[in-house]
Figure: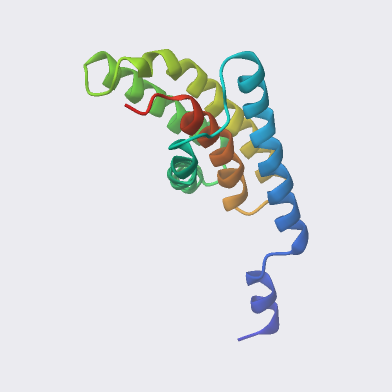
Length: 150
């Protein structure tokens, strides 16, 4: 195997540092305003073990969005729009709890925020997983800490 191919497989330290910093920023940017302005956004009780599961599920979803989008912002917007319509429709026809209709607008705003971050990160040639990781923290934290458990 050529040396150049091996070097390309490794993640540079600056990408790891950027991933940690941006993920921490995403959590603070969404959790702090929600906690101070709307409701408690601290994971307590059963939400501690739920948080990594929800963030992991969001990560898988957003990795799929990144694969479908192939770096194109309009494709990300299309997938996000379809997701919001499907969630809203599911709540209206009774396939999802009615509470979903209350949080879909916030979910749409957070997904729009993710699309913006992803466009900027991909413009700077970040790896495909970085926008998904930052978006998973952005989406997963409020879902895991604020939605009803029953």
